[in-house]
Amino acid sequence: MQQIGRYQVIRRLGKGGMGSVYKAIVPVIDKVVAIKLLDPNELLEDILGFDQLREIFTFEARTMAAFNQPFLVTANDFDHDQRGRPFFVMDYICNNLGEMMGETFRIEEDSRVIRATKVLHYGRQILAALDFLHHHNIVHRDIKPQNILVTDEDTVKICDFGMALVEGVSFSGPDNMQIGSPCYTPPEQRKNPKAVDGRADLYSVGVLLYRMLTGALPGMQSFSLSLINPQYDSSWDVFFAKALCWRPEERFQSAAEMLAAFERLTLGPAAPTAECPLPAPGEIPVRLRSEPVDVRRSRARPHFAVNALFSPLESVCNRLEEGEEVVIDRTTGLMWQRQSSRYPLTLAGARQYVDRLNAQSHARCRNWRLPTVNELLSLLSVAERRELTGGSTARRGQWLWSCDRHGQHESWYVNVSMGYAGVQDIYCLNYVRAVAAAV
Image (cartoon, rainbow, N blue to C red; front, top):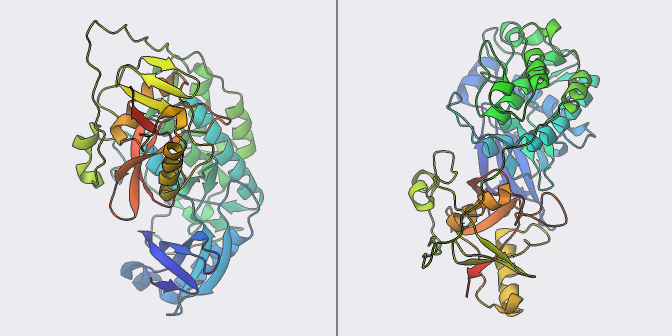
């Protein structure tokens, strides 16, 4: 294992222009953390010099260390590696909104549409975090899906303050250097990034919320959600027309004002879900793949029968028979646990959980196993009707482990509430819903 200071590195999670982020373990106590190391690309180092980049990096760490707000990532430790490069340590969080939305580097392509109740849940937290930042004279200047982490408790945490403007002090590069991300950056930030205030972040949030609800970036002229979905009335159109004004003086003037307006938005009834027809005499159950595969993302779609956003090409019309401990789906011939595991588990913990079910003959069955991605995706129409995702909390069963692998360090899971398959580190925490063949 590579060392960064006293921390043992598991692997690199990603690299940006200024630094690399690693997953690592705290010695002795074996706590998993994320480490951001100053590791600039050559072009940026040539432009600014390592000494100035070190100053910017340290400034970011000091800013994050001062946070005491539940929706912001904080820095917990700061040190230098064996080569004298600074690094800081953060909590390790598996999910980010960019992955959940399916947004790629081809930003113009459609992303996943997120259910409105979930957007309201995340949007309130993001605006509350920005209200805190702006109250302390901090402008983030790079609000985008990839900088919104989502915890196992389904709360958001804003990260990456390398571009932040703190009491007028900020990252400073050449006049033609872009600060922020294309499509999320307001016009005034593109013209003069050093002169913006909190209203720049509010524009970015407007773009983010609109994209979450529609899967598309807002057009130049219209933001009429009411024409897209009857769940949204004209008040949603008014909200986005104000949030996305090009002139900052015509936008919401504070995060608190925008949050208050956002909380006043209401939803109409959702379209009814079609009921499944009764099975025809002699109908053969839909057979889904039950054997695990180890497949990387670029080759997974044929195995999982999913589209480019990793949602199923065809939905399964479930016919459920509910018992005290299990639910049998006569459409697929599968028997599911009625409820998922009480707590989220690592992949190793998920396998141990299934072994315990078999040792205990749960529901008089000893053939429980982790389901495949295909089997988990068959539950999506049921989840839409708010069945089979129950538990003591609203988030229980939202993210479920599959038995399918993605190499040595990652495994496939299914986000049931958002309807797609994704990849996570095997140390991430997801729920388990075991499956077996129905007798």
